[in-house]
Length: 150
Image (cartoon, rainbow, N blue to C red; front, side):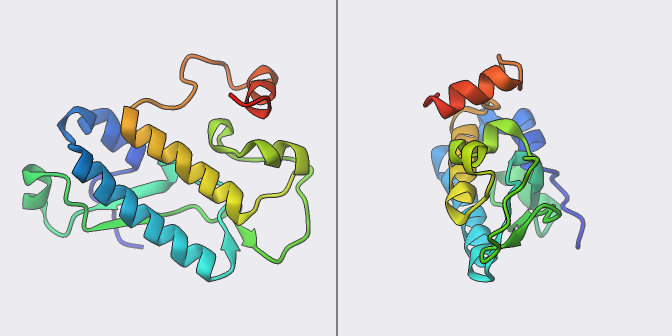
């Protein structure tokens, strides 16, 4: 894989969120959603989608100085991914807790819908520039609150 010269989405937003317009954010989200479409179209569920697993790349350095015209977004770390046809549930849920869909905690199974939930949390991240639940411990209480609708 080529080097992503602007790092991951979390670090980029940390450095630049106040410089981004809604149009720039929506363009980036569109590119990420297209990547998710290709992953799902291949019959794969990512199971670990979060801002640290999305990398941004510009075709040339001058674009970085102009604005947020991301030439490419790359969804990485497919280590936890699995086939959509897999009926196997996970005894241990792995991933970044705020990005895991509530139903996964009950069913112990990731689906295309749970990836889309994770994308929704990425939309929140892009909109606010803040990591979800940043003021909370990532613990059993947070899991219970998420399952309860938080």
